[in-house]
Image 1 (cartoon, helix red, strand yellow):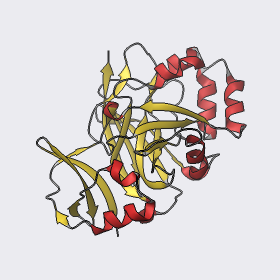
Image 2: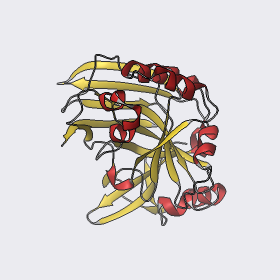
Image 3: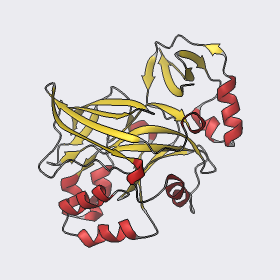
Image 4: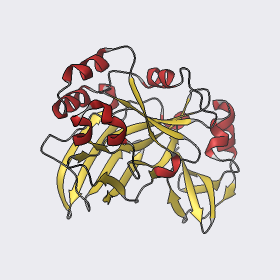
Length: 277
């Protein structure tokens, strides 16, 4: 059975709803409530939802009180892409091969955009690309509650100037897109997940690529375990797991482009590109 969780808005009211086989059922709990519980109890609440909702409300990003974090250099192509843009190639070799992964803060909930919303590129950067990723929705105990699609928009020019500029290359308004929903871990299994990326410009495809999480150098559980070392998340967290789809060095996104990230298991996340002053 197809099951996914959506955050919906009807006027000034928001709620979480379960969509199962095209039927919508409202939850009495927020995502933060569910992620504060053990996985089996959260599952029982999701499966017990009975109150019908129309399902024609506005779909919001599938997040409420969670921080978004991200992992870097988890695919060989990602390592090579970071080396392309930087004069510090050995640094990325070390991260790729090391036991400790690269983890960094990506977004506060209010900076995240959802399916159909504009995702941003900085006006002080001349080389910007999307990063199509699987996002782990982790509960307060670090267990994988579910999965979503994510776009970790990045300024390759800013990080390429100096790796210490990574926060400015990664963290800004509208730099993170999530959605369209959360697929519970018990409904889809542990993967691997196929991920496709397309970029359209004036209706024409200007880039397309694909990858699989089977190509990752690190496992989901391993990345989640490192994130929760010496760091607590009472409302849960979302961890983007890195990208294996990186456009070649001559390509950059432009305002007006349409970015599509697809996974048969997790849906399609579509965002137009907007400039962030």
